[in-house]
Amino acid sequence: MKSKHQKNHIGDYTSLSNLRRGQKGKVLSLDIDDQQLRRKLLDMGITEGVQIKIKKIAPLGDPIDIELRGYELCIRKHDLSMIIVEVIS
Image (cartoon, rainbow, N blue to C red; front, side, top):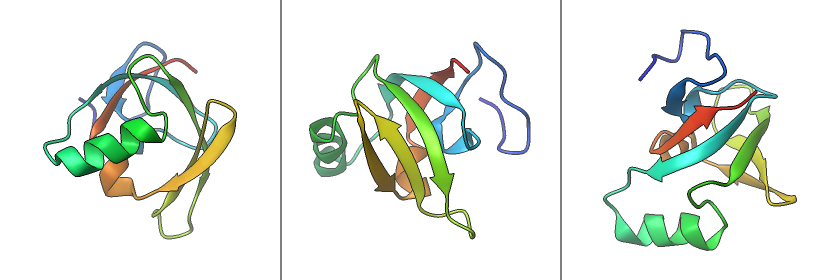
């Protein structure tokens, strides 16, 4: 895993919270112990294989606005840090 200060390149694996505005990632796994949070994210469409684009990042870095499956969500950075993605753009 890369730290948030390193640049992400296509094909890298990282957490969704490390992507920059405009970057896209394909969800590989949800590394979440809290079953209630896991179920909530799955219900919102964040499942393995889905492509997610970082739309906006709040001025202080939290929350982050993402786009997936034709709609946008605003999610806390901490929750996004538990979603492992492959950088696709």
